[in-house]
Image (cartoon, rainbow, N blue to C red; front, side, top):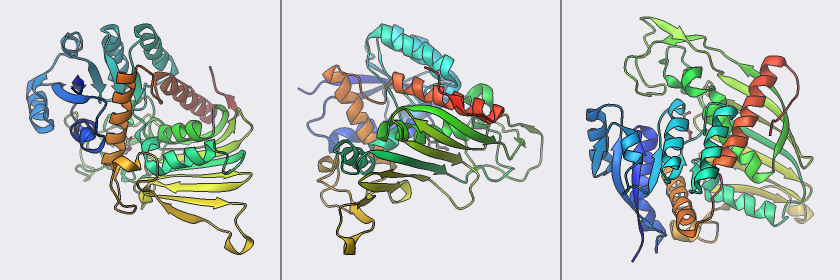
Length: 389
Ligand code: SOE
């Protein structure tokens, strides 16, 4: 019989929806499934929100006190989908109780906080994962396969961007994503860390950064209620405003330990860009390019191509590509954000059942936090900063 894992989810917002959908749908794609998820308890800040989230996302019970829930004997997995300032306390409590933990990105608000989580994870011996879902896009996993097979040779250069526009309006609300004590950083932690994850996954460890870090919107209308509405609430601009103390944009140069160089930029203020998460990688034997806005496609060029056929070709991912045999039967049918979360759930559950740490785990989350810290320090000091270790 397929094993069952009882899940407690802490938080019930946008990511709660994504993860709940993945728990329900994963076995429909990956069968036989490594384990089935029983959506046991959903925890939120008020009884009403928790009950509403549980009903909507298919959890058996609701609760408001995560400490009682993570200590329960019938809970196997704790899934953290809260704002960033709660990640550490919840993860550490869950790991101390011996639970497997998946935590939304960024792992923590800074490297010091991430280290406390990594230490707890190492001590517990439990399985842990950080939800950098985009590397589970089949086209991105295909890029990794080509690189590992040496198909584009030695990597010379990585260029990554993550551009959105939902915070371009200065009258968009002051949600937690614009408050340093809750979020840790702005575009850097929220979306830049996805690109840092790509860079480490595809190229290797980053050794030094040289960054420009900017804020464009210093105050925003104070939001009523704690919900994260991204850019979608009242934008009249009337009423009291509060201070934004995080970055709206950063651009950084990169040095990799293996000698490659690169750059990353991220902003949520780029009018016209929605989820423009891209990379282009140049190697001695070819190049690879990816844009999440066309996530089924990988652009590939091999230097060995015949002279009259040189140029990027489009590979449409499908059954013969990573994870593809479990998705849809014909290339080009198209996947979306949901499938990346379903694959993430499959990899997490496979790791729990197999007893082997998945990647990215809390060690990766910690390293990414150190790189984010170095980017902020470089932006403040206007010089190259070596990434800590
Ligand atoms: C908002 O910028 C956001 O929801 C991020 O927090 C997610 O990580 C990203 O995948 C989509 O955009």
